[in-house]
Image (tube, rainbow, N blue to C red):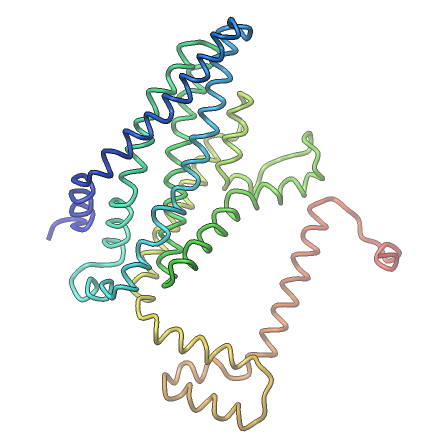
Length: 332
């Protein structure tokens, strides 16, 4: 059997699409237009910034646009790949063959990410223009290209992971947007909160998972955490792909799983003893394991929820270096 057959098929299909060609042409033309407009404005102003500052500011503008593009690719390209197969009823047919979860996940990832990869590859030569103008070091130029590739991979992995759990397209897009915001922004906010919003006390820990850390360091020509950040973000992307490969064969039967979730959530609503007995009977008809796992869960659920919230509050207070006293709590 051919290794990763879906990957080869999807790449062949995607390479023959006209959209694959025109996407990279449009992407290159867009970045050339931005670069040309910037250089025209610089020449009209009679080079008031100087060639080195021109290269620096042009590289800054191109980097921001490229990073924004790579961070959102998963939202538009991979967030509705597997969920679309579920709605069409073709994902279950694929699992009737010898294909496994990672075959389908990697195949869909390769087919949908080819346009983004070509577009990014078409932009790389334009990044050399500010490098030739000066004001941009070779280290910054090379690491920025690696950062863009890594952020693109992470964004696509987040999109396909959410798609493996979703059935509705709108929910898949919303979930991808939420997870992108959580991965990119939440770790930085937590570390800044730990440092008391003080730049001198900032020490990244959770922020190592966010490519924004390496991007902000690159803009300041600092690379103290660059490789650690790259390794952590890359590892998270592979973990999400592994999770998507595990979830995809188990979540394509959406009708039955939605029915089970509805019954299980009904367990936490207050009701009479007759309703509880009727619920347990329905769970037993579906699967005895559901009946057994749903017994007396409400009390433990609420206890775990309160314990988790209390732990988060105390952890944030401890990390921020604030001392909690009895008087302070009473005054609060």
